[in-house]
Amino acid sequence: MSIPEQKLGLIKWISKIEDAALLQQLTSIKNNDTENDVPLSAVDIQSIEKGKQQVENGQTTAYKQMMKPYEKYLQG
Image 1 (cartoon, helix red, strand yellow):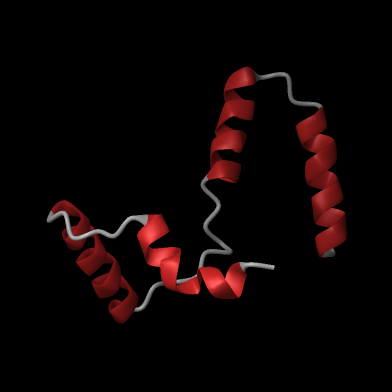
Image 2 (cartoon, rainbow, N blue to C red):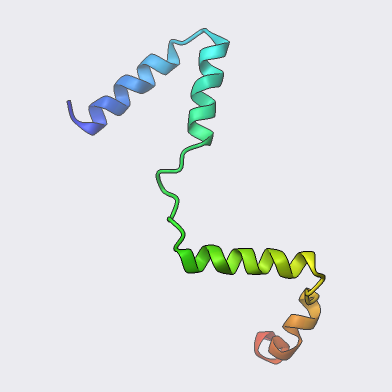
């Protein structure tokens, strides 16, 4: 069976479901779909952890302050 045929079969099957619990389970599966997530490298994870630690330590910069040097480039 081809992928389009499988999809159509699932659509037809789902459209006939009357069981609220089963629909909730399917919605949960759909919402937790990680197939398209990009895996993080060790460097990415370290960078995220460093940023989280900086926030916890109050080492942050206000958005307006951070954007100030770039305002002249963003004025149109």
